[in-house]
Length: 189
Image (cartoon, rainbow, N blue to C red; front, side):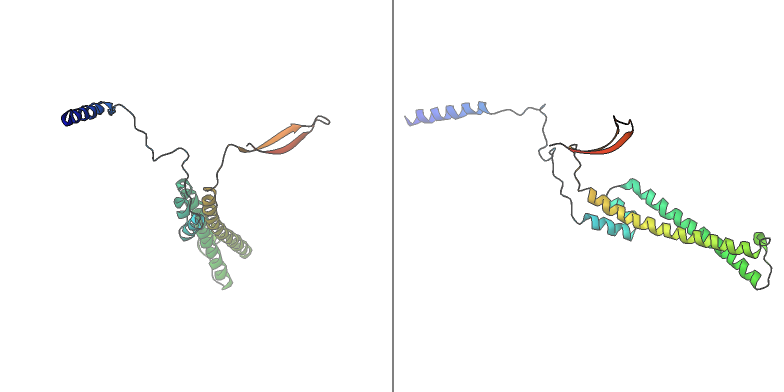
């Protein structure tokens, strides 16, 4: 009786191996780690970090925000302003030295020899004004670089959906046939 029971249990368990699924070699596997609506955690200190990086080295905040295409624009704006600062400063000192030479009773040689005192004064003022303006522009572009990196890092956390739209409209008034301008803000639930 024991042997029959043992053989019966052995046969039942051996038959259950046929119930297992075989692995299909052509079956596509789905990566369960990646989902479509994956929530990306944004660091709340990222805007201040981007602004700090841009303050240390212009363009570094844009690199931190992964907006690499903005880096040449930053350097072109600041570099052009600094170039014109240097050029106007050189011209200012040329005219200033020529004016000082005339005041001391000496003679001016070179391309400034035919220019009178009043033109030397006007040229000094012109290049001084442009030099100062170029420096203000360079400082303005530097500050704009910092602000842009900060704002861009803030906007990376902003969710833009298709439910929110802003559309300008131009409608014709039916009474006097003049155009009325308007702005429509719509939010769909």
